Length: 304
Image: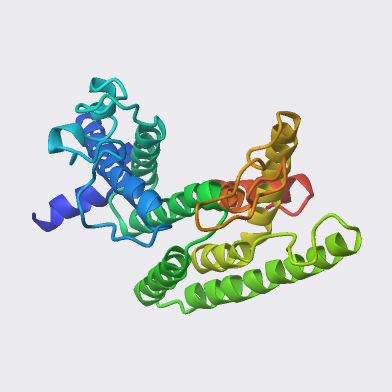
């Protein structure tokens, strides 16, 4: 492809002719949905410590290897009416939901930044945080490979930006965000645990929050830097509180059985893991943070 073609490809769809913009967004959705299919594998296998590459996907009920025609993102689930072709066991709607979510994420990042490094960075952030969120919902844990990947890729993208813009501040902001954010939330865990133990809300061997949450914040800080972290924590706390209150009214998300076969810990009734809300807050800040800050500062008289 010549330089003109590459330049056209990297433009935002809003700057392209309508037909080319439509193809760009449609292809972005397809690529995102395919990664969503892989994300389903990550969510299922990483907590179990098994390879995400081999063996090929199989029906968890009958063990039949899933054919390529039955592994098309979203479409195959619809055509199969949500059931295995061989044994007719139900296929969770969460699989196409994640594929659709990543497809929409691919469309959103390309609509925002074209086929650029910025779009790739945003999509990797969406992919990793979505994986962490769903695994935390299932197991109340944050697998080490995923938060390490979050931190590593955040600094890699920050380094690439620093070199491209000749601006080392990109890395400095991220280092402060990762280190400072992780330490602050770790301090919150320690303080809240002390208070809850003294008041009898948790046992002597329990913590008020999981230690995976500060690790998630380290990764988020490596991507977003320190300026957006207060917004992430605020959004996560507000949305997490609302969800916890709603679930408590219905009996809670968990609390009636151990989190996994290898861990006999039973979450308190009405409790919700905080990781998914940190992920949600981070994505909201990544996509809308600058606009929200301008709006907030404008309302307190600090805007331009």
